[in-house]
Image 1 (tube, helix red, strand yellow):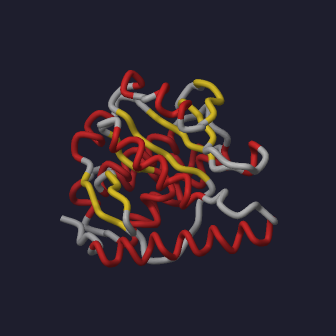
Image 2: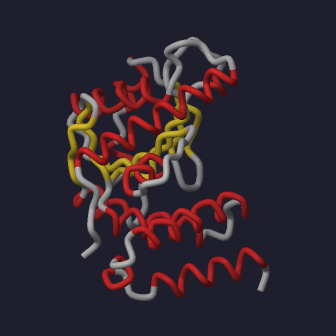
Image 3: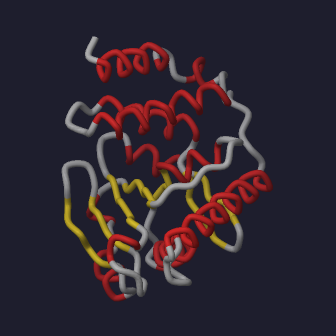
Length: 210
């Protein structure tokens, strides 16, 4: 079984991610308060109050499970079903619905900045997400209670996204790179997920047109 980071490491990595976000915001001239940290705190509190079962996935989860600091401009959340989406509570809290797409239900965080400068939030529900949500672990991180997808589930979700032929090649490459990075830092995952390397190689060949 893969050696998981400690809660202290999770906290340090999340803090580093927020610091990188802040530096990016300063270079872009974004208003104070319109940050991913503020959006994540508000979202985590809302989901907790609404008793929504979910799992943080995407770039935030990758940051938690890997050593190299990174930032991401959005928040990805897995749901067992879109019926679990607390639409009314989100709207009352100032979150703005942007629409339902093939693979996600998209929102923007509250804030004073123009819409495209506010944190994007993507809720996802497919055949893999119910199990990911069921197995997610809850952590107390920097004053937040976050439900985070387990590492094997995160790899499979990222790999599924990389395999989706209708997504842009740049997005597929990014997801494939995340899978590769997670496997490099947690080589024991290959024993837990037989065939994962072969699937990843097939994705690389497909993107390159082989």
